Image (cartoon, rainbow over all chains, first blue to last red; front, side, top):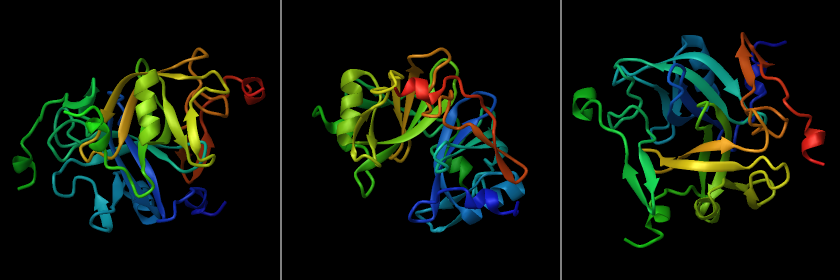
Amino acid sequence: MKLMDWLNQIKWDADGLVPVIAQERDSGDVVMFAWMNRAALARTVEVGEAVYWSRSRARLWHKGEESGHTQTVHEMRLDCDNDVVLLRITQNGHQPGIACHTGRHSCFYQRLEGSAWVTADAVLKDPDQIYK
Amino acid sequence: MKLMDWLNQIKWDADGLVPVIAQERDSGDVVMFAWMNRAALARTVEVGEAVYWSRSRARLWHKGEESGHTQTVHEMRLDCDNDVVLLRITQNGHQPGIACHTGRHSCFYQRLEGSAWVTADAVLKDPDQIYK
């Protein structure tokens, strides 16, 4: 088997991207959703930390490069259609982990209550202190 | 606040879709990833079960409509960018839950080992017995 076969098996979308879910290994919490291209996924495996493709900045984004909140990747899973990746990670740099740029544990902090999205999780650290 | 404001707050992509992660409430397992459009999300809230938008069939897809493996939705979360939805669900119809069309618990049954995707989870029920 060629070394890059595992990358070729992924069904990249029209933009050459694959959706990626980051789940904390120890808590089971889903903390983030982002995208990777081929280079990002290869780099993630190479360094053992999550490296995403930033669609807004159109460049590789080593998660935590500014905040220090890196994600150690323990396990990588692929779904039945070969078009979604699930990472089992440890969220580094703060205890409990801060994955969200708002300073919260998880990006999924808004909960639907009746017909309104309500902020359900607290800010653990002021973003101004994270991104100096 | 208007009744549909919570739907308007979502940043739908160019195709009018939003990515959706389904996580089992009790186990914490991420079992599925799919897409919803506005009608699917509204219907999900209305019936209390996951209704996705099938991109391949281009129609609403009430998960479990053929298999009986419906998903009761206990909680719905939205991420910091308002463009990804996380469902906390119970996977019905089998114990343990079968979310995958291959008859497995989770769609994320392929694990990267070295440079190969390896099937890491067992089939719980023969798909021929699920989709008669």
